[in-house]
Length: 145
Length: 304
Image (cartoon, rainbow over all chains, first blue to last red; front, side, top):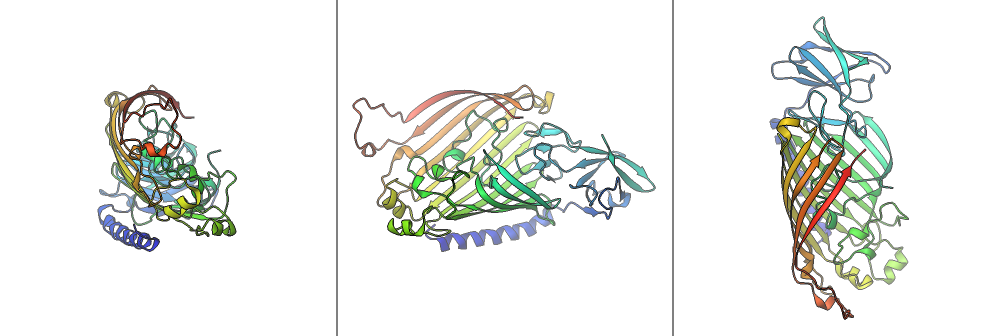
């Protein structure tokens, strides 16, 4: 690289390329559906319609003011797991893909049962009790598993 | 102290940090806990070129891209580097200010994209920062450009990791450009290089994976690294082939439980010839420089 201008030019081209790649990536990697609920802070119960899950959609991200971090609701056979998307190492928000849950702060990895598969996290993810009632999935925030 | 920062969540997937923190550069800089990498020493490229653990004072924004599952970004603004501490054998490592009596006279900007897809982790990051850590009148007397990005250092890197069923693979490449190395050398006579670059590839397999699924692990691994601290030397610098290094590392990492690792490795270091012109007053009993040397390393690691 000969000059700061060259570096900035190269950087901008790289960023544009990455942006273009991100657009392509959208096609490769369907976004994780986010279900936003309007429950206020302090609520103990979140309700997610069963219709959010299809043959293709096996997990959704639930977001509500009632809980500081997102909850990953994962279909597990006929039941559902509600995993708090907060790394048990240092409390950073987690990223879910089709195969794993990652923490981008220090590299911890978890499976969809909430178990640690890679350090430095040592404890499994917090899970909330769920129940299927009236075509909805209830997540009980005051009942941890 | 390694880190001390305030974290403010803008929403569950976006947060700001302010204070002494670790920008996202390379793989080991953030993922540096000794139970999380193979080998007793950290990968040499990520000690000598990407100066892990690189922490500075500033602010950072971290988040997840809404419409692309698995895509994360970061952007940070920190204090810059101190070029008076650069060197031929050490690169920019000693130029980090690390939040200790920092001269807040320049800035550094770092940005990254981190993408998780299936079992892959893919990252690209860049850094540009000023390296004149002197007041303008002092910088002028040294004929160094001053200001936020005076005598800039630019770093770019890309790395990819894969792990599944006990197999782990990682590769990284990086390049550092110090375009005003000639002026820095004139001011400080520290033989700053103009260009450094390198890369490594590592392959590991957990022999106990099928039985214990990471509860216990016995990882056999191999890694090859190329580190060139003398990629380009300015006119007033002195080239030293000993700064072009290859590392071949092979070993075992045993984790009886998560959080504890017992490590052993054999490291072969192969360099070019040491430039004798760098020794101004040769010691009568100078230690012989070995261009091809092997080491056995043993270590115990834990995290809590």
